[in-house]
Image (cartoon, rainbow, N blue to C red; front, side, top):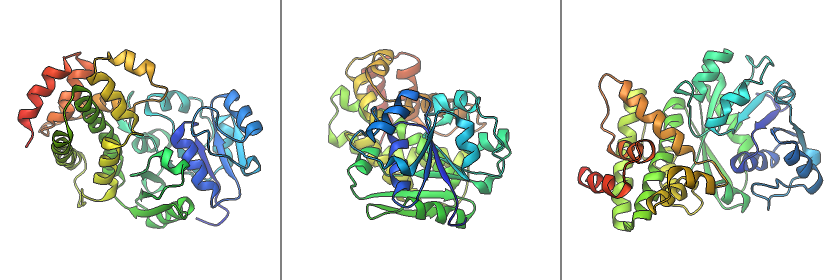
Length: 333
């Protein structure tokens, strides 16, 4: 990619806002598609997102903001999608611009619920994007800590190592350290799965389980993640790297984790619907739980996924969290 490569971010939530902030550290202009005209007008006038990470101030002359997805898709060379998985399909239905020669970067932390496909697979199948033009952003990195400019780490995965490095360079700064990987599918699954395990950690917390149990739960979660990814995409990888284990730990333990918060509310007795209504942000792990469970059920030889199964039973079969976890504890070691 050349120095004139143009980047655009699609989405206006906290993670999208954080990624725009990162790119603005390195680029003269960043495209930004957002659905809400109110957010656009407020941002242009007040120089911050009114709904998410409002402490982050932008130089608006650095931003090309539009409510027209096609305008931004036409303008940019690298399209970074940060729309929650539950809504990305409906947003992409508005897309008529030819993006077949663009580089697609997924910062979506989930699977397309309508198809059960990874976001990268969806772009390949529907928009004819070659796999070497598809990249994935993974943490461990919370948007709130990016806003505070606390030291954080990202992994950029792409089959094309030069593209991965170029994207990584444009996201790097004094407070953002980056590395690259070629495990695009494995990391995209890991980004999805860690949200499910964070919900499990939250449920455990809500039920009153302590730190000792939480550590056992996370230890089992990383092994369960390894089994799942190995079944779906077998290749040599170190599951203890930060893109897998590190991202799992920060999502499972952090006070910034919306999935942990969602799980904690469910563990304390909220219904799934009431917990969703009370939260101002989307808990991606809710949708990821059904996708992961269904994918595993379709495999001829199913992976042993007791934690995912437990979360699925609570969220989708309305089983009692206390009783489900009483059974789960005997399956952990």
